[in-house]
Image: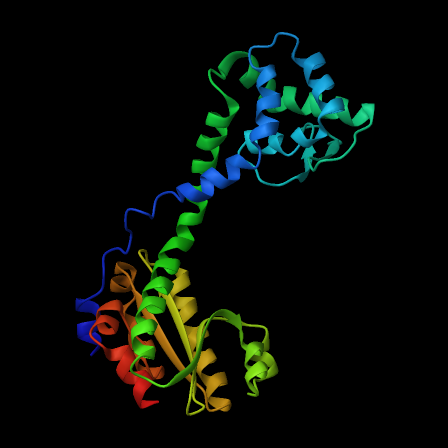
Length: 289
C-alpha cells in the first residue's frame, strides 16, 4: 500500500485559480475607492506637505490607505527612527480613522517623507492610486498562496462528501470547526481537544465520529515531520473517546520523507492520498466505520 501511495503522489495541486484571488483583490480595493480618489490630488503635487495636511484635517478616513501604499496591512505600528543611534527613538503610529491633533498630522507627514511615500507621489506615480493599489493587493495576495494548496484539498474532500452523503447515512459534515462543537450534538470531548480546530468532523447516524485532516506538501522540511507526530497524538486522543481519524495528504514533498510516511502508515489507521480518495477508499472507510 505504501508503495502505491508514493507512486501516485501528485507533483502539484495548483490550478489556474492558485495564483491570485482576483475577487478578493477587487473587494479590497473597492473599500478604499473614495479615499484613493481624495489622495489622487497628491500625485505630482509639489506642495505635497500642505496638501496632505489639508486632506488629513478634512478627510481622516484616508489614514488606513498609507500602510497599504507600502504593502502593509497593519493600522498600528512602532518604528525606530535610527536603529544605529546609541539611544534609538521609537515612534508610534495609528492609521485607523480618527480625528488627529496637529502633532499627529505632522507625524503622518514625516512618515510619508521618510518612508518614501512622498517620493512616490511626486516622482513615481503615473496613474490613479486605484490602479496602484490593485497591484499592491495582487502582491499581498501572494502571501496567501501557502494556504491555497490546503484549501484545494479541503474543497476536494468537501465536494466528494456530497456524493458520499448520498450513499452513507451521515448526520452532519462540519468543516473548520473546533472539537467543542461536538457538545452541541451531545457528544463528550476531552479538554485537550476542545479548542483544537478540525478540517472536517463527520458525524454518522450510527454515532461514529470521524476527524479528517487534509494537507499538501510540495517541499520537504520540518513541517511534514512535525505533522506526522502531531497526527499520531491526535489519533491517540480521539481513540480515548472511541472516535476515528483519517489523514488525506499528497504532494511530491513526501518523496523525500519516506521514513516519516512509513511511520505514519505503521501508526495511523487510515492514510490516503488524493488518488486513493478518488478511487473510493475514503467512502469505503467511512461506510465501514
